[in-house]
Amino acid sequence: GEGPAAVNVALLCFHTLGGSGVAAGELGRELSRRGHGVHFVAAALPGRLDPNGIRLHAVPLEQPPPVGTQAFTFALAARLVEVVQRERIDVIHAHYAVPHAAAAALARAALGGEAPALVLTLHGTDVPAPDAPAGEIQLLRSLAHGADVVTVPSAALGRTARERLGLDGQPRVEVIPNFVDTSRFSPGADRAALAPLFPGRDLRSVRALCHASNFRPVKRPLDLLAILARVRERVPAVLVLVGDGPERPRLEAEALRLGLSREVAFVGAVRNLPPVLRACDLFLLPSAHESFGLAALEAMSCGLPVVGSRTGGLPEVVEDGATGLLADPGDVEAMGAAALRILGDEPLRARLCRAARDRALRLFRAEEVLVRWEALYGRVVSRRSPGA
Image (cartoon, rainbow, N blue to C red; front, side, top):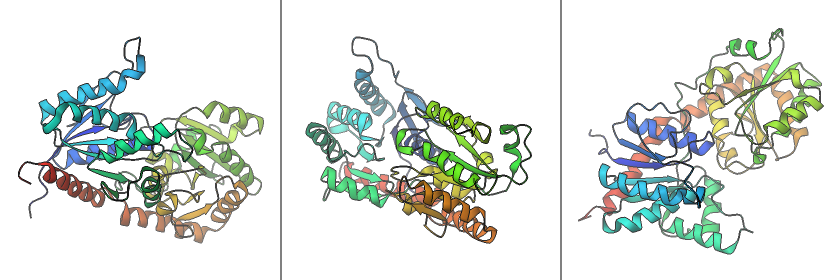
C-alpha cells in the first residue's frame, strides 16, 4: 500500500547533546530517510546529525546587543516565518516549550491564516515545578494550549503535564516514546575501546561501568563515584564517563579526593557511542529525575543492563528486575548492591543483557515509532488544510 504522504517539517530544538537534542536529531534523520522534507530552524544541527538531505536554517545564538540572547526567541520566530513561506512547511514541531514553542507562537501569529500546524513535544524541564512563578505557569499553559497536539516521551511526564498545564481536553496529550537506531546501537562484547582509556592496565578481570549524560546536577553524577567505590570493595572495576557539562569539574575533583582518578575515564562528548557501550558491562543512571532516559535505552539496545533510579519515565524504559535494577534516587547503597548482584551472577547478567536488547527491539525501534509520528503529522495537517 501507499506510505503516508510526504510532509515538510520544520524542527525546532536545542543542538547540544542533551536527550531532547539527540531525540530531535534522530527524528529528523529518520523522517528524511523516509522521504519527508526536514528543515531544522536552530542555532546548529544537533550534535550527532549528519547533514545529508537535511536543511539547516541557522539562527545565530548570540544576538547583537543591547538585548543579546534575549532576542533569540524573536530571531528564531522571524527565521521561522521565512522558512514556512519559502519551503511551504506543513508542520512546525517544537521540542521544548521555551524558546521553541514561544517562537512558533510568534511566527504563527504573524502568518495568520497560512500558519502551519504546531506539534509541541515536552521533554520534562519545560513542565513547570509546582512552586514556579504564577506568570511562568500561565505562559507555559498558554503555549501548550496553542499547539494542535502535545506529545511527551513517557506516560509519567504526560501525567505531570496534564496536571500542571491543565491539559485535560484539547490539545490531546499523546505519549510517543523516544526511539533508538537498533542497528547502530547493537550488542557485541568488544573491549577494544577500553584499552586506550586505561593505558598500561590489564583489564581482563576488571568490570567496566558506564554512564553518559550532560552532567547537570539532576543527573546526580557524584553518586556514580559512590556506586563505583562500593563495587570496588568487592570486585576490580572502572568507570567510563561519556559527555560533558557543568558538574564535570566537581566530579574530577571528587575522583581525585577519593583516590579513584586512575579508575575513572572521562571521555567527553562522543559522536560514536556504541563501541564505548559495547566495551562495558553495566550502565548507570542514578538521576534525581528522568522524563524518559534515552541514555539508558541506548545502553539497553547494545545489550547492557541498567542500574538506575526509580523515577519519572525511567521505569517505562528499564523494566525493573527484567532489563536492569532500579532503586530510589540517592540510594547509592542499593545501587551499589544492585551493580554487585549483576556483576557477581553471570547467568543473571546474561539474562538481563538479552532482555534489555529484546525490549529495545520490541518497543523502541525507530521504524515502529516513526509510523506513529507520521500518523500524528498526517492528522494535524489534514485538520488544518482547507476543506478538511
